[in-house]
Picture (cartoon, helix red, strand yellow):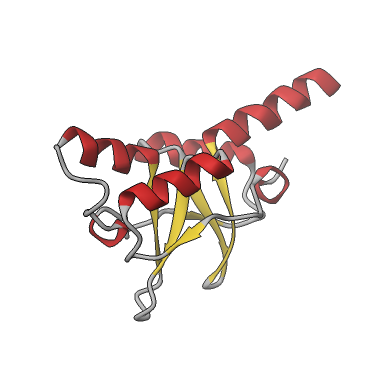
Length: 128
């Protein structure tokens, strides 16, 4: 099974100027653990995860003041839609993260989470 078959094509996108609370509320409402952060000044994109928000709160930073741009991961590991789920899971394990941004060229196509991978593998076992 390929990444394109398991990824979420509906991607939550936030801007670097959103507060952490705004981003967290959007993530909670969409039931996602990550948001793609698009940078308006041409620096491409990054990712904000629930782990990033948690670290900020644990450091006593105010989620109503702190902005996404100061907590975003910019060195994002990306996956191609034609990668296998095995390749994607291996990349996540190597990097110690749970989300991959799926791209074609410079275009964001979706997000694949470790949960998506497990869901797909579970379905494969049930149908086999």
